[in-house]
Length: 156
Figure 1 (tube, rainbow, N blue to C red):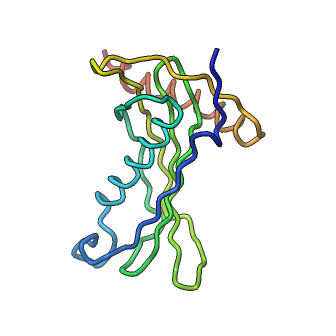
Figure 2: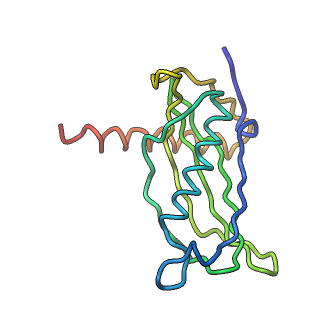
Figure 3: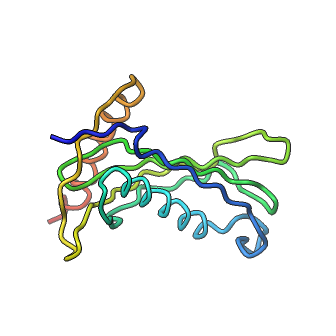
């Protein structure tokens, strides 16, 4: 049985907020941030699975603060749960101002599925949890998984 740690797949992306990333109110366009979040989650999931992946779901996005022209954004992805073929990825987005101070402005959980060349789901490595935080994330991820299942199939 193959195991990987959370550290094995951690991903960090740096973005500079430029004029083309802004909405009419002069803040970072939410869709642009969502695109960056999806990329970070995909890279994290590919690092864990060793395969191509596809996005299955993105949990609610709550924007705690805006980002503005010239801000540096740091997006950090880490795996929180690995099932048979699916993985939950947490992506935290921090805004760093010019003095280097960082503030969390967004947190998202995405579910990715590992796929083969025929676009069929394939098994992923098990996740070896090393820290208390990782174990707590795993337990909360199991709850989110059940909630997603209920939301998806509850009305059928």
